[in-house]
Structures are given as C-alpha cells and as structure tokens.
Image 1 (cartoon, rainbow over the protein chains, first blue to last red):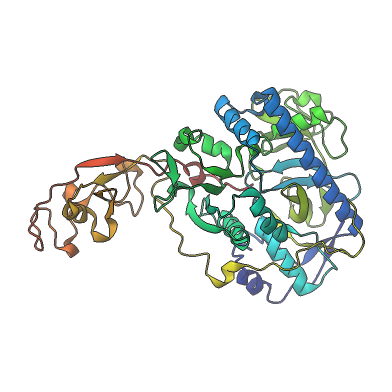
Image 2 (cartoon, rainbow over the protein chains, first blue to last red):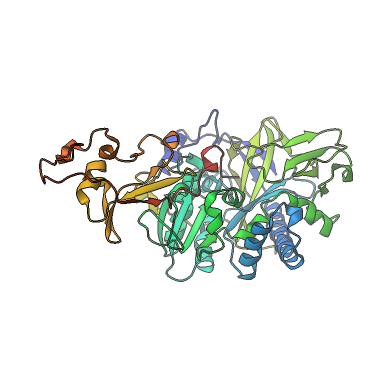
Length: 365
Length: 138
C-alpha cells in the first residue's frame, strides 16, 4: 500500500455533486483526489480474508456473551442485555459495518474498532470513489463490491415484500446521505421504503408508527442503540413487534469493550491489539477510548502508558497508522453481511480520525 | 479465500435511483418534537373549533374525532413552527382566513368556539433527542 499523487479531475466538484455528494468540503477539504491509496491484489486478498475472520470472531463473541450472560462487562444494563439476547436468539441478520484498521502495508493489519451499529462514510466508499476510478482509470481495479453486496443483502435481512422505514437525524448532511443511499439500495432490491426523522417516530396503540400513523414493521435506523436506550420510547422497545436494523445485538460489536473481550479470547492474534479495561495490562503507549465514543471523540493517546483505570474506558495498545507527508491514513474495511467487500481510506494530520478526516480514494493493480 | 487473477473486485455498476427522483428534498421532518413531551388537541365532531385553533389544513379527522397537530406541552420546548395550544384557545387570534374569530362567532358558520374536549398525550418525539446535540454516525 502506498499513497500516490494523481491528477485531479478538472470538474471534480461538479461530478461529485452530480452524484448527490454535497459535503465534499467541510471546514476544509473532505473529499481529496489529488492522491490515491494504491494496493496490490495480494494486499486486497489479505484484507478480505482478515475482515472475514475478524467478523466471524466477533459473531462468536456475541454468541458467548448471550450464552454466558456476560453483558455487564460491555456496560449493558439488564434492559439492553435483554434486547441483545432477544435479537440474537431470534437470528436477526445484520446489514453492514465498518472495521477501522491500522495498517502500514507491511505488518499485519490491526483492528482498532468495529463501527457496527451506525457506520457512515458509506456513500463515499461505495459510490463516489467508484465513479472516481471510472473517470480517471488511475488503477486497474478497486476493492469495492459494497453496492452490489448491499443490494444482494437486503432480501436476506428483510421479510419478502417488507415495507421498510429509514430513520435518522436528517438535518445532518452525512447521516442524510447515508440514509438516502441505503434506502436507494433497498429499493433496488425491490422493497418499498419511506424515510422519516427519528423524532417523527410515534408510539400508538402498542406499535411504533410513522408520520401517517401507519405501523412501522421494519426500520433501518442510523441512530445508536445506546442513545435509543436513554430516550423515552425505549420503554416500548420490548413490547413492540418492530424489527430494527441494525439489530440490537450489534451493541456488543459497536462497543469498545469488544476489543478487550476479543483480546481475552484470542490473545496474540495477529490482527488484534492488546486491549483491556485496565491500562496496566498493556505495555508501552496506550490509547484510551470511551466505551461508547463515536467519531474519535474522547480518544486519547498516552505515550507513556497509564497507571489507573477509569470507569467506562477501554485501553488498547497503540498501533501506528500509515504515515505519509499528508498525515495519518486509516483503513476502513466494509463488511456487508458476513464478508469484507470494500475499503475506504481516511486521513488526517492527527493520529485520531474524526468525522472531518479526509476521504481519499483507492485502487489496486 | 485468495482469488484467481483477473477477477473483478469492484461493482459492475453503481446505479442510483435517486438521481432521477430528487431524493434529497421534501422529506417530512418533524423538527419540533425530539424528546420533548408532546400532545395534540381532540375536538370530537367539532371541526369548527379545531380549524379555529389551527386552520383547516392542520386538522385531521381520525378515529372518529377531529384532531389538531402535535405541539410541545411545555412552552419552553416549542421550536419555530410549533403550532402551540391553539390560536382561539389561547386568545391569540384565530385563523381569520377561515372566517373565525376568538369571540366564538364564525362569520361563515355562526358556530361557537368550544375548544378541545380533550388532549391526547404525545405519541411522537420519544426518540431523536440525543441526535440534536451529537452526530449519530461513526
């Protein structure tokens, strides 16, 4: 893997906006195409294999947590634990997720976290960088089967002829585009869809209802389970027949405590970093992560390690990210269903990737 | 797991339906609820009072009763666009475009404003509150 300078499309702004990608520039550039990350086919094969194996380990972990009732170590209260167990035992399938991976291109890729509940930067990875490669031919191929995989996955997630609602914080551009795009793939899979803001969901006559008071049978929510847990309508979740996507058991995977539990079970695995709820278990520099943090919030790098544990924090050995003149590169490995199907690269001047970190396309030869 | 050389690793095509249907606009966003307690007025068969409070476009006949739009119970929670407790009910005017006045005398129907016969406790707004102050994506 290397970062190569490449020519910028003269009309790149018009071209990405024509796709509906209207947040290409935030406080600074978000979409960057004066460079690309270039892989070779063997590296892509490796990433695909690593993603599949890590995901399978994660599913095994969920099964163990449900079997052993080991929810407290994930910070899940009894109510959340019940949702996790019920959704897992019902076999509710998941749609998608994104693993954040530290990889220099030389050593083994390392799992930093699994954004398994509400991953964004999806549209950029599935669509915008695909069109970039079509236009520029900067490389022979791209690890990006995300779109096809999503369209194929929906019928495995939903009941036949399901009417699917999509909900989230529609005033947030990135969330809105993610929802629009997923909704689009769902429609292409042959389902009827509607969209509404999370605040528009109603509770009436023992059912969640939409803005027309029609029952919500299946709903994709780009809204974290831990937030739902803290809000008034969580009182109705146990009673409602609504099917939520991602399912409630994803709370086990989107939770940074996953990292500590994975390390306990697979100590020494080449694609895991030492992780614990106690930083004294980890030698060398430590990264402290809030259990339910999002978009890099609350993450701290402790170069000299830490000597005390804080409640609600997870500690992981520091793994260097890919470095270039442009800063630090983070690899997002997209999982649809149970398979790794694509890559999205983010980079930042900081070693902590946040929601404004730049998206850079990739290709492989 | 390793694949034969030459096998395609990216989508054959990435069609988007939304490019033809202007998917980015026109969504019904209920901006005024979030986690605030909500309620709406019920008027029974009294369409007149409902429309006096909110205008004809905001009243619906549903489940055998006329109902007004949802509003935040606590005035401090009300956002722009919140219809409030009702214009005639609060004495703040009434919907003159429909010929109603707070006096209760309609220039059109000569009916008296009686006000709602009950309120329905909020059944929206129980999700979404956290999303107003934090980003949901990850």
